[in-house]
Image 1 (cartoon, rainbow, N blue to C red):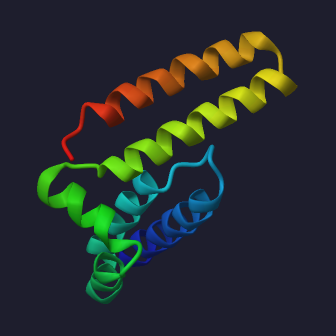
Image 2: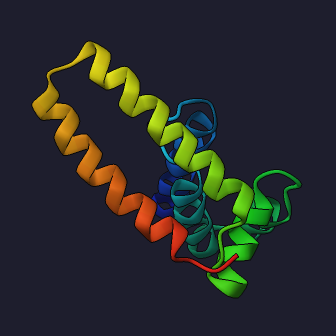
Amino acid sequence: MRILWGIGGSLALCLGIIGAALPLLPTVPFLLLAAFCFSRSSDKWYRWLTTHPVLGPPIRDWNVRRAISRRVKWKASISMLAILILSAVFFDLRLVALQAAVMTAVAVFIWTRSE
């Protein structure tokens, strides 16, 4: 079972790292999932992830205070707005309306968390 948790953690970590570069793919939820999976598979990988200088702080903030930093909130909001504008230019407006509804819900969730 530990192997499956390790594979899940590795996949989530890869998606989180990819999400750092792609505005549509979230980073922190995948990092949180990776930390969860690694906590069940390998103490070594869990410690590495949570103490990593770049990847660790959002995980620690969430674990300790259920908090999202203001910088991350702004970055996420600007990314969502940018991808929504690009979608409006290139795709059907019905799809963009659905996307806007989902992004609005995500933005409300993000901005109602503590900092």
